[in-house]
Figure: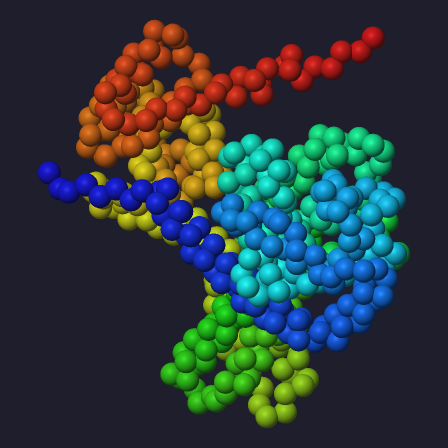
Length: 501
């Protein structure tokens, strides 16, 4: 028996995620170091002005060192400009400040309103105790109130000078009123801030950090200070949307167009003497990527999640390439004085670019499809990902394929085929996969095809027959998932009937 090779799908995606997290952490720390160093350097004269104003306003030190809990639960001293009167009563008072708090000095109130009192935390960022963006650090008493699992997640990253929660609650002091403001904070505000912090920890990136910084600067402006900013505006802000929807695809399309132009030029030189030059190839690639991006934006393709996209959208990509190629030919005929690019070259360039654009967008499906096709040809036991057998080659089976292919981890599964007792479906293909046997063949197929997952997708079946089939799967080592009878629910007329009087 040949050796069986199983690739742990969780291990693959964990590795990819770890690489992405490393890149994000590297960019984040490099950005923190750069901004904090130059920020302290250029803001030092302003710090001197604030120091003189604070000393003139009231007696006491310029800076306040707040005890906070940092990354992995390590305590640290968070630096701020002092905004309260230096009295024992103030030190022993509530760690929160409410609207109209008498402990705050006049210049301190202005520093709080403008958030300038937080600027000294650039020193904490430079030391590595904080980041520019991250969950705002809390005192130990508040951290102890967090559920343990949530506390561990929030404290897994460096706390930040600003955060999505800081933007949503930029007017927190104005929201806290009355003698019970601390209870109000613990009951209503802190749980929601914790929820926002978790959303940030689980989905932050370098570009979401730029959005948070941009939104923070906006909230300082007087006209916007009282505006309630929505969550989706922060977590999917203009910088993040521009990068993911436009700039990232522009770079990908530029690379594809550049290589396409180079390959087309190489092929053309085999039959004709043509010297386009690297500069002109770069220009062609830039124009192609820019115009394709513009047309795709008009057609709405920039918002498509290509992992789940319909193959019909290939036609839209073709339209973008054809229109752009026509514009390039027109520009070449009217604008280039050195020589006119041959039409055959432009046609090859357009065709290769189209193939590259489709391949880059449907890459996950293409890689998985090629791997599965190779496995069918070899009919071997070696597998990329976990091998799946679907019981039932009907509408339920088609639904099972759809659900599996729409999964986030679809590329880590390899569908082997269907089993079905309908003799008319023998050797047939459903949703691109073959019917490879009957239900009585399940134990043999599990062993011979190295099946790791079975999807039971027969919607209409007797209890005794269901038990017989499931008994065949027991003891095989494969996991069995019974697809809910969604089809019956969707097709039931009573579920769609609207009663009227």
